[in-house]
Structure formats: structure tokens, C-alpha cells
Length: 203
View 1 (cartoon, helix red, strand yellow):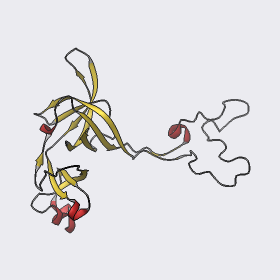
View 2 (cartoon, helix red, strand yellow; view 1 turned 120 degrees about the vertical axis):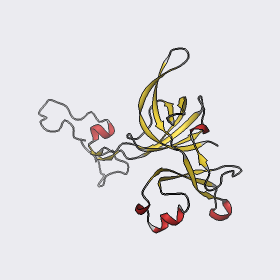
View 3 (cartoon, one colour; view 1 turned 30 degrees about the vertical axis):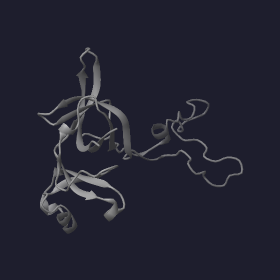
View 4 (cartoon, one colour; view 1 turned 120 degrees about the horizontal axis):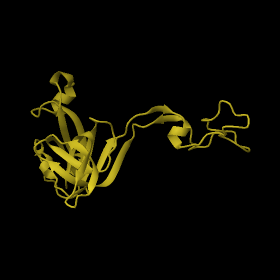
């Protein structure tokens, strides 16, 4: 099972052997440390907790210092479920060599936050007509009730907070690996802003 944490850097273009260009996202994959191993006996399920990034030790609380004892101050922690035999131990290191070109991966990240948005941007409503007496209702949602209903139905599409959701993009292909700079090139786009932490897991 292959998995690792990285940081989204930027988008780029990669040419394959046939000269075809592919859009790709560059992910910086610094060495990861196994900070905790969970087993069915102790936790009820099998999982590995990975840590990446650096942080000043005085920024950790007492629980964090105890949890990361002898491993250094880690900035980001994520957990991956494990099926089958557990082969990881606390303190193990994972790096970009875990993956190779051609691997299919699922990438999970937090999408860009867009704040409070109206129905046109959030749900793609076309708004009201631009004529026949309309003046200030081009982007309004229109009626939200009707008939004998006296409450707003559950699931009604309305204005609200948009973005900052956990999103997984599946079956992306690793098209290039720059081991010298720890750059992993994944075909296509992935969620999140530049510098956000993403989880990479092979299918």
C-alpha cells in the first residue's frame, strides 16, 4: 500500500514520449515520518499516522510534545487506514521513492474557500429575466416555497458558505518524478490552494 503527504505547489505541463502535452500539478513531497501506528488490539482498527513539515517546538502543547517525543516538531498530521498485514513502525521514513511513473493515485485536499456566495455562483442559477419590469432581481433565487408548504424544504438550494470542503480526485496518473527536488507530477488538477497539504494514496 502506497501513501504519503505532500504540498500543492503549482500547475505545469509535461510532454510524454510521443510529444503529447499533459497538464499536471506539481506536489512537493518532503520526507514523511510515521508518528503513530494503530492496531486492532489497541484502537479497534489498523491505521498509520504520518507527519510532515516542520514547526517550532514551543508551538506544541503538552499533548503534542508527548505524542511526538523523539520525532521532532511536526507541522501536519494525517491518518491512513491499512488493510492486511501491518509492516510500519513508529519512526519509519517515507519519501518520494514510494511512487513511480505510471502509478494511479487518489489525491485528497481541502478546496479553496470562497466565503458566503449567492445562488448564481454557488449553484449555477441563471437568475431572473433582464426585462419586463425587472430592476434589481437579476441574481436573486426566486421563490423558495409554493403551494400549501409553510416551511423551507430540506435540501433547498440557497445562498451560503462555499468551498473549504474535503474533496478527493480519483485515478490521477503520476506522469513525472523529480527526485532531486522532491517534486511529484500528477496529471490533471487537484483541490486546494498553493501550499495546502494533500494526501496521496495509490489505488
